[in-house]
Amino acid sequence: MKEFIDVFKKTFDFSGRSRRKEYWLFVLFTTVISIVLSIIDVIAGLQLTEDIGVLGGLFSLLIIIPTFSVTVRRLHDIGRSGWWVLLTFIPLIGWMTLFIFSLLDSQSGTNAYGPSPKESYSDFATAK
Image (cartoon, rainbow, N blue to C red):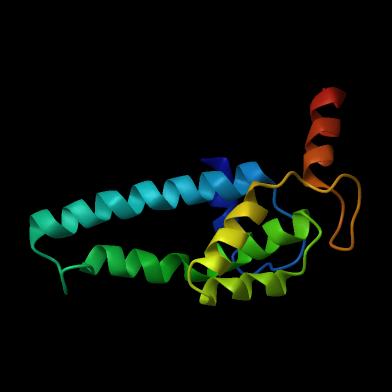
């Protein structure tokens, strides 16, 4: 849950790096919340169309920028430019490419986008 909140705290931060854990927990929580809101939309009769409900639509608008920022930071973590996020506009091939990129392990050490958050975390954990 901490990672989910951290993504919202860094909504407009497109610099730095995000670990796989932060990215995938954000994806997990947003997916679960979207499903729950969709169910509520159907039960309460708040659907605008067959696919979009009021609550789900508002939530989708709320998470657009945090989703792009965490994706850009995730790309930075594997040593790629944030411009790769534009692949989302290419159906299927772009989505699959970004999915594969999101699964890759962090680039060790410091890269052009900053120090590895994975190593910073492990250094902190061993210092305790």
